[in-house]
Structures are given as C-alpha cells and as structure tokens.
Length: 129
Length: 236
Ligand SMILES: Nc1nc2c(ncn2[C@@H]2O[C@H](COP(=O)(O)OP(=O)(O)OP(=O)(O)O)[C@@H](O)[C@H]2O)c(=O)[nH]1
Ligand SMILES: [Mg+2]
Ligand SMILES: [Zn+2]
Ligand SMILES: [Zn+2]
Figure (cartoon, rainbow over the protein chains, first blue to last red):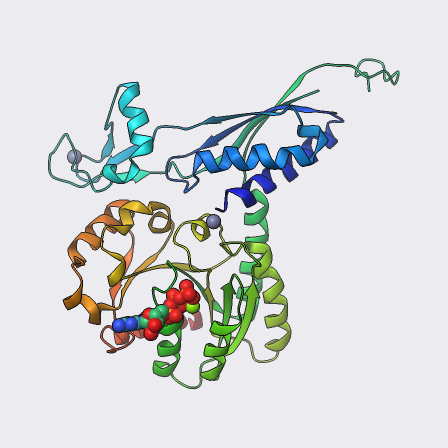
C-alpha cells in the first residue's frame, strides 16, 4: 500500500508546478507506470481519488495512466523479444505478470528471457488553467 | 494573469506542460545526499528487504557474532510500531537507531536522512565500517524507494515458497544480492532452491545468491567473507 505515499508525492509535486505556472486548477495528469514498477494501478487510482479531494486545485483533476508494454531480452539471441502481439493478450499480461517470468525464448527455444526496464513511475504531463 | 499584456485579468487558457520526470525524483535526490553522508562516515551500507519474519533481524544478530570485533557497525531499524528489533541488536552490543514509520509499510529516503544525522553525530570521530538498514517487513513497497544504500539485499525464507520471486519481481529486479534464508528447514518444506534461483536470475541475472541458515550457521562464512570483501575494497 505504498500507493498512498506515491500519490501524496505526486500531488505535492503537481501543486508546486501549478503554483509556479500561476494555474488555478489542474485539469489532468498523465502518468506512465511500468508493469514491473510494483505499483498496483487500482490502488493508485483509489488513492488519487481520495487524496485529490483535500486540495482545491485538484478537485476536477482527471488521471490518465499509460502502461507501457514490457520488453524481454534473450541473452543468447542477444536481442529483445516480443512475447505477445494482440491487445487481449497484452491485457492478460498485466493481470498475470508472474506467468511471464522465467519464460523460454520463442526464437532459440533455449535461453530464459529477462524483463528489461519497465519499472519506471513517471509524470508525463499536466494540463492546467 | 493575462500572458500577453500583464493586465491582471485572468485568462482561462488551458496549458499543457510536458514533464517526463520520475515520481521518485525528490526521494532519489535525498537518497543521493544520504549516500554522501554514508561515504563521509566511511560506512558501506546495505538495505535489507524481505517479507515479515523472513529472518532479517536474526541474520544481523548472527552476522555480528561472526564479525571481527574491531569493526564498527550500526543498524537502522525500520518498523511500523515497536522498538523490539532495535533492542535485539543492542543486546549484541551494536548501536541501533529505530525508525517507527507509524503505519507506513516502507522506509523512504527522508526517514533515513533523520537517522543519518544522529549517526554522523555519534560516530564523527571514529567513523563506521558498515551500516545495515533493516527495512519494514514487506516484499513489495520498500523496493520502490532508494535510500542511498550501496547494495540492496532481498531475502526469502524457505517456508515462504520458491515461487515468490515471480510474484514480487520488483524487489528482485532492484536488488544486488538475494539470500535464501532458513535453509535448515528445507527437509520440511517443498521449497525448490533451483526454482527460486532460476526465477530470481531470470528477473535479474546480476544477482549474487546466498543460501544460509542463521540457526545452523550453514552458509554464514560465505556471507561474512562477501561483506568483508567490501571493506577491503574500501581500504584500497
Ligand atoms: N529455522 C530457522 N528459523 C529462523 C532462521 N532465521 C530466523 N528464524 C526465525 O524466524 C522468526 C522471524 O525472524 P526475524 O529475524 O525476527 O525476522 P524479521 O525478518 O526480522 O521479521 P520482521 O522484522 O518482523 O519483518 C524468528 O522466530 C526466528 O527465530 C533460520 O535460519 N532458521
Ligand atoms: Mg526484524
Ligand atoms: Zn505498502
Ligand atoms: Zn533466444
């Protein structure tokens, strides 16, 4: 449940930026949260909806979260490997992260794939007025 | 303020600001300060992360029994409520600072910063060789917060099951060392060392892995040698 502390940090930073820009209201915040970030998206959204009510600048603020697709690296083929293509499987991935760990490379059928990056938690942009 | 003439009228202009910055920027900034403080003290610092009860405090107690007596250690204990773990460390004659997070399930760089000031004050004459940070018992949340440590250690105990690296990948992704603890219990649980190793290494091929028991002492010497190796490097 560190999502609450993360959202507190987000609101503090967003408030700082809004006041620097003399904005009265923040309308939208766009985030990127990687699948290996350890953040539970539902908890993050819940914390945002609860905490934004304490601050007037955020009262109508919308939150968009982009979840990049993780990439996997094969140490034998020495390149990144796509594990899935269609949208449905992609959603499946995000709900089912653990089943994608220690998978064998579909190309060489030998080496074990490692996830690359995808643990970042970024504030991409803010819209305000 | 109206941007064009500064007339004082409010404009309803919608503005989009691109940031592309990490949400952990402020934490990481303070963590880098912490690292500087640790370096000034001469202290090699490790951050221990595991689920509740995986054996962090017991491993520290045992580690101090094995260590040469002329080395200077300190422990920063993170707990939600009590002083119990700090008391256990003090029983071993090692200086311990307790941070109670009052509900938070992880330590962050700011909490550590407070503790470092007290360490810097107490050890400013003699310095320190090594600092251990025992994070709050939790395999998820602490993994997100860099504290300024030199090495991060993730621990998993035999009763928890060997599938855990796949369920909590971030702790393994961000650690340098993986310790499988309580290996004296292997005969009683269907824990597979091979599975735990394979999963952990697939997430992070750079992990240095130890298998040990603080109760039987198995694997303790390798662990102690590994730690002492950092102190030798420091003296060069
Ligand atoms: N059999 C066995 N038991 C152990 C070992 N190490 C620790 N224990 C036991 O496991 C329990 C929890 O150990 P702690 O060291 O308190 O665990 P911890 O990770 O510090 O726990 P929290 O600080 O509460 O998260 C205690 O009852 C220990 O005696 C071990 O190597 N073998
Ligand atoms: Mg403990
Ligand atoms: Zn948490
Ligand atoms: Zn391959």
